[in-house]
Length: 109
Image (cartoon, rainbow, N blue to C red):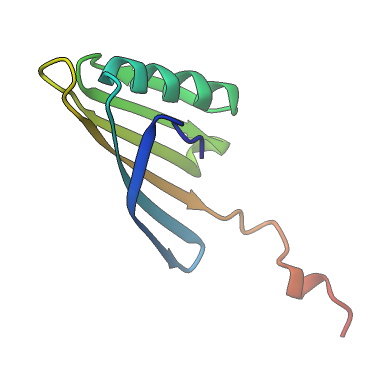
């Protein structure tokens, strides 16, 4: 997951249920929401995701890859005045491919 250098990240969570891993992390930055949204759209696309951005003064970047088995949602709340803090949250969902073998399945017995 790309990291926006000018942001402070907090309250990370991760939950694994069978083959699905869900993660969430919150962030805040002094940069405007348009800069944050543009960064995540560009970086996710460079990482092989198909990304769609809605809004520029606060909005979302929704991205998928691996046929929808990996999804990312970046939500950004815009600052209404110069110098105010922009806040947001990143949510990820990753579903393991059952066709891949786990390390325990490849070790000789």
